[in-house]
Image (cartoon, rainbow, N blue to C red):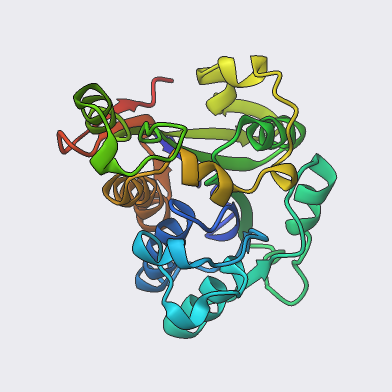
Amino acid sequence: MIDLQLNKQFKKIFFYIVQLGAGGNGGYILQQCAQMMNIFHAKGMYVVADPDVVEEKNLANQLFISKDVGLKKASVLAKRYRSHYNLPIAAYDERYIEDVQSLHRLFQHTDYTGCYRWDTFMLPVLIGAVDNNFTRQVMNDYFLSQDNLLYIDVGVESAWVPQDQRPPSEWSEHEKKRHNQTGWTGQVVAGLRLDGKTVLDPVAERFPDILLDQDEIAPSEMACSNVVSSEPQRLITNRLAAQAVAGYLSEIFGDKTISNHVTFFHAKKQYMRAERVNL
């Protein structure tokens, strides 16, 4: 277990949270994290970044309603939960975060937040709710450049579907079986840097294939909505992913500790398995 308040000079922690992604995973994560910040009276700032627009097809499995269609996802969610939970939640929806400098700027809105008081430790928290390794590589580079950062990354398996977009009624038995066997699993990895040292390895160290992925297509060149239309994510898997992230933040907000490094989950089998912090 890692105690985030080892330095007893700091009696409070200010959580400056930046979340990339407000879609299938991101919307549920934002709702649960905002609710817990409210419950635990956690002091902090929340920024959600995603330039994607709400589409009709998002209404079935994301936290949007008909009147949201055509609006920016991040702005809709930020406004909703800022009002509902009375929290400082802001949206950045101008463009995708595709470089370290852009990500760094999202953590600079600290004026008038009280995060630099003598008795307060400001802990930047980066939540990755994206579906591409291009952005994970950017987040990994940012993680390694910071003295203090908690980086929580969530990834889920997409459900396989035929690429010719035939309706399910025209699928073969083999295709139906393959579809039914995929899209249920995922993982959450907590990476941590304190005082310029890596205490917990980030997702790209835990799964090094992320760094070996040479696909240079940036998110701005292929929106998540386009990917998901061909490789859909399951609603129940998105919800379980958010629940796993919520487990980390519940402990962090409540006890100021981190006990788990990696959490694996399977939505169909209804289980989670955590790898404990081993220091």
